[in-house]
Every structure is written in structure tokens, then in C-alpha cells.
Amino acid sequence: MVIAGSIIGANLLNIEEILKLTSESGIDWIHLDVMDGNFVPNLTLGLDFLRKIRNSTNLPIDLHLMVSKPEDFVNYSLYCDMIDFHIETTNFPFRLIDSFKSVNSSIKVGVAVNPVTDISFIQFLEGFIDNVLIMTVEPGFAGQKFVPNILPKIEKVKNIVSNWSKKPFISVDGGINSENLKLVLEKGANFVVCASYLYQDYSQIKQKVLYLKEIAKNF
Ligand code: DX5
Ligand code: ZN
Image 1 (cartoon, rainbow, N blue to C red):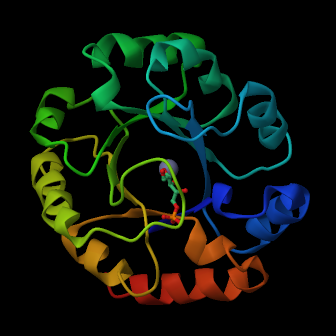
Image 2: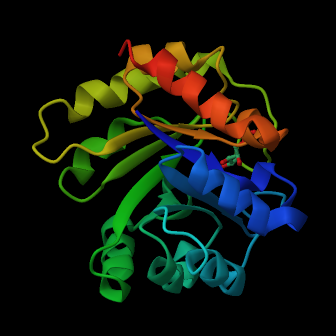
Image 3: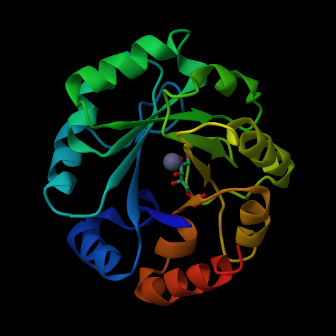
């Protein structure tokens, strides 16, 4: 299991301390949420801030675009290792994936889906995606409650990709904590994004990461 720390859940005034604690904590990836105030009713980081984070950490960066026009954010792929766009924001996923790769040929690309979006479309993306990011809350804010109705969708993704030669990550994002981790791992998630659970009180981050990894040992 990969743990991605979503630092938007932390007090960003302490960003240097947060990045330091994150890299010492055993977290595998940093997850960064980009919100445009349009696709979601919230606004987060821009390209300059992303570049500074890129230069301040050796951890791989998973960039989650929650923006209405992902084609305007293609340059963001220069400063991350994986970029996830929402399927609800484009009718042209192949073209979009190509444009990320034309800026950064080694970029991994993920497709994110809102809780009520059906997942069957991913059958058409075999060989083109490295991550399927299943939202387990509606996108826009950290600190929301995990929606258990989404659990069957994780299994559906696992079944669709089971015969793919290049398997994407199966990620879950939203309300993940030590209580529901087992539920998502049971269904087939192998990449978990956590903000509030890890960062609301990040003085305990190392212990929390260890605890999550302990739970994951049985899967
Ligand atoms: C929600 C974001 C998530 C968020 C997770 O719109 O995509 O990455 O930071 O926060 P928690 O873990 O608090 O639900
Ligand atoms: Zn996210």
C-alpha cells in the first residue's frame, strides 16, 4: 500500500516543517490538491507554489487537478510525478493525456472520478493511465466524512484492470482514516490519500503512518 499525504489538510503557514515531518514520517507520496474555484467551490495552490514544493522535497508528487479546464494546467506536469484529471471535466481524455506527456514524457497520468460518476469508462483507457483516483467524498475540501456507498466502485475498478498488463494504482481520496482503511484495502485499493487523519495534528504523523502500514500488512 502506498500512503500519500495530502498536505492541504495541514496548517500551510508551517509548510517547511510539514514537508520535513512528511519526509521523515514514512509517507510514500505527497498528494497536492489543485482547486480552481470553479469545478469545486474552493481555491488552492498555483504553479509557483507547486514549483517551490517540488524543489523542497524528494518525495514523489501526485497532483490532483480539480479544475474545469485541465487543458489549461498542462504545465503543472513539469513539477510533479503523477497528474490526475477529473473525467467529468473532459470529453477528450486521450488528447489530454497526450498533452501532459508532451510537456513531461515521464509523467504518470491518473483519472479521477467523483463519487457519483460511473467507472465503466476506464475499460477504454487500458494502457493509457497509471492511476484511477476514486473520490470517497465530493471533491473540494479536506475533513469530510468518508462515503461508504463508494466501496463497490473500488472492487469494480479492481475487476476491470485485473487482466491489464500495466496495472494502474487504485487510489482512494476522501475521509480515509485508520477506521475505514481496512474496508478500502479489502476492496482492492492500493494507494490511499490522507489529509485530516495525518495532518490535523501532525505532531503524531510518524506514529499514524506506522499504524496505517501495520493495518495494511494483512492485505
Ligand atoms: C478533497 C481532496 C482530498 C483531501 C482529502 O477534495 O481531493 O485530497 O485533501 O482530505 P481528507 O483526507 O481530510 O478527506
Ligand atoms: Zn485530492
